[in-house]
Image (cartoon, rainbow, N blue to C red; front, side, top):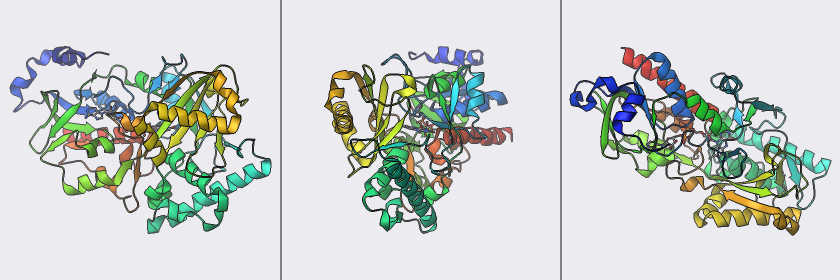
Length: 449
Ligand SMILES: Cc1cc2nc3c(=O)[nH]c(=O)nc-3n(C[C@H](O)[C@H](O)[C@H](O)COP(=O)(O)OP(=O)(O)OC[C@H]3O[C@@H](n4cnc5c(N)ncnc54)[C@H](O)[C@@H]3O)c2cc1C
């Protein structure tokens, strides 16, 4: 969608009849609520505000909705989720129901309660050039459970997740560190708080959306007054109305819901006037965004000889490891997922470095013949996306309470929303959705007064 003029935008928002909106800026706001960002949190906030009958607008910096839920339908001709892939079904985010109302097909992954980690079906393992034997696979699962429990029970002392791992895991350590850290959380375990890991809720059901999670977000956003290519670079708060600025244009509202990632907030791309109180700024710094990227490889045929939608790890010997989502949704697309510091370094080098790593990693397990079957590749680089700057938030050791700080509005005018604010479903679409709705409810009740 191309940028629209202010008049077209106001018309789309049903506000053209309000006339020269800025003429009365001292008394009348342009909108009751301005929502910054059209990701999961922004869309759920928009849907709730729309129900209340308040006037509002969604201002999005990029050219698309969904934020970190982004389905690329063009590159390979099949839905390719560059961001969120498996979504949790919760009371606040009944994804199955929402998708079905939006005309989209979903399917539920069998529960992985056995492993007690937020992961779709039981993964497979390679050791390293062959399939793991049943005994090896069982050992892998039991180590996962014991490492997960060890981190959870270390929680109250709030050490790093890495230092909470059991001492007796021997040569499974690199595998455990990868699966629980870079793969699941996009961060190395040494950089993550055990306290917040302990509070992390792992809902029972994970759901896949056949046409992609980004497609679902687009359908759920339909009808919301939304403007793309509108990066907010300044928020002035503390007076009767909040004023936001995008590309030299100013708009006012009674309240703002701000859903930008903590990395965007920490980058200084949005100037606050007056400056953010110190405890907000410190909280943002403690919720760092990790790195998680996918290299999508389209094969001619099935040279890996694996089944559709298998999730495969290797018994790793060091940090240079990855996970494979094979033959994604029955297609010829395989996704190699990397994460953590290693992923951030590769992303900094460029897409070619990510591609090379992923292909070499596959070759090391399945043999070099697969190179002849590669048709096309694409690698995400979320840490280079200017309006995300990373994958999702994890609290540094000692930083768990930061999420609570961000859940309080700034001067009763600016509500932080988005995955980073959720205390137990951070990093998840379901968490972002719930927080967006919660912020909208707060705003509605405040405006009523
Ligand atoms: C590779 C990857 C895999 C993932 N896998 C899963 C998964 O399988 N399951 C799961 O539940 N979660 C997953 N996640 C996490 C999930 O995608 C996010 O937690 C969730 O989508 C965040 O939603 P949000 O609304 O908080 O933020 P965002 O989606 O980041 O939305 C914020 C929006 O604000 C916009 N914005 C930023 N700054 C400005 C500004 N100054 N002005 C205007 N607009 C601005 C951004 O462009 C963006 O659209 C994954 C994430 C990544 C990166």
